[in-house]
Image (tube, rainbow, N blue to C red; front, side):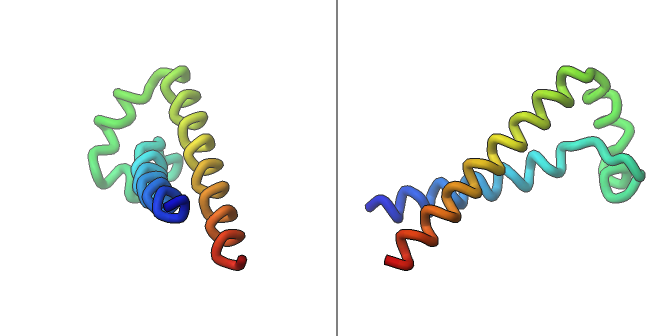
Length: 77
């Protein structure tokens, strides 16, 4: 039961992590500028938005890491 909950949390955080990383403003004008770079630069002009997006991305990455380590330990036992 606990493994099932961890697997669900892992899948959700994986998808959320991909979305959050793609929301970050690109610095080199690569793929992010191809898909509406002008729109994202107007929306994320505030430094508060960038800080909150960074914090949310780091928190999601930490939850993802804890899920991976916990599942690894549970499956090893």
